[in-house]
Amino acid sequence: MFLAYACSRKIKVYQLDVKSNFVNGELEEEDYIKQLVGFVLSHQEDYVCRLKKTLYGLKQDPRAWYASLDECLHQQGFKKGRIDNNLYIKVDQDNLIIIKVYVDDIIFGSNDDRLSKNFPTKIQSEFEMSLPGEITYFLGLYISQRDKGIFIYQTKYIKEMLNKFKMEDCKPVLTPMVIGCKLSLKDSSKDVDQRLYRSMIGTLLYVTTSRPDIMQVVGQVERFQATPKKYHIISIKRIL
Image: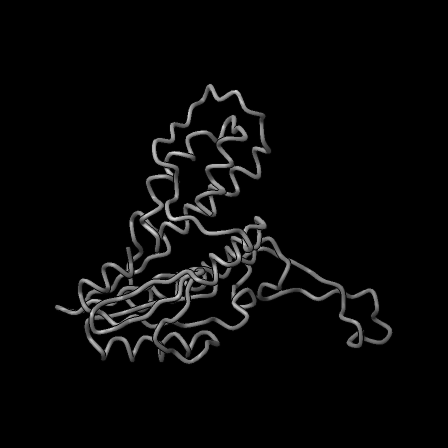
């Protein structure tokens, strides 16, 4: 939806990558660690170190990082989305800048080039981040911004999916489902692994982002996740 909106408003989308994001969060609790090997104080080996910021492996890492970033963005005048807490919006007269955060990846865009250039400068003064550039890869999506619109590809994700379910060497078929196929809850074929079936469904649902041609058949096979049968999983393999 972010990309669709950017495309409709002809907004150029950029990407920032946070370096060591989980060591940027401020801790609210008192946490201690042992002295690090090679940095132990002589005659004070029983001393411990109190953490001022988060460290990889702490359960508080994600929460502390998001809290630090949230505070920084609010100080710059951004407002958090009511439905999506990872979406931030800032309106400056008739100009708009929108930001989407996913762990250590931040994508943003504005209808004013000035705002797009100023935002990375301000955020880099608070956190260590890579230099901004046009978005090309995000959450398994290859993204290409052209004059005619924004194009999305999932080539890498689809290859990894086929490899995961050992379907990479199978012969292709012309249609995702056999013509006239009718799936039923009363199927008499053997039961199959429910976790495997649900994993296949979940993976295929994400592929519909760039492949709407399989959306209808994926919607049909996902109805049988409670008690999947052999014939149901055969239908999924045909989609793959």
